[in-house]
Image 1 (spheres, rainbow, N blue to C red):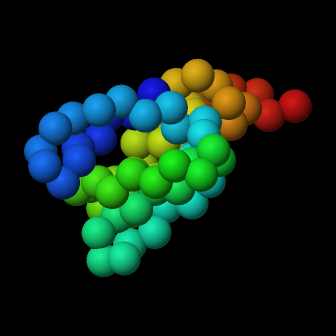
Image 2 (cartoon, one colour):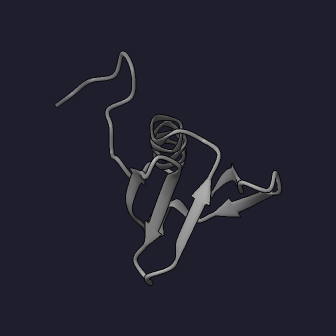
Length: 71
C-alpha cells in the first residue's frame, strides 16, 4: 500500500498491486486494473518510487539481498 494525496489535499492509501499505468496529463493520473482513475499531487517519479519501495518491502521483486550470494 502507498499513501498519496488527492488534488484537494486529502491523503488516501492505494494498493500498488493494482496500478496499471501512471501518466502526467499534466497532473499525475493513475489508472488501476479495474478501470478506476486517481489524480494525485505526487509526480510520476514519486509514485513510481513509492511503488518500488512497497514492492521491495513485501519482497515481490525477488531482488537479491545486498551483499548476499547471487547463486
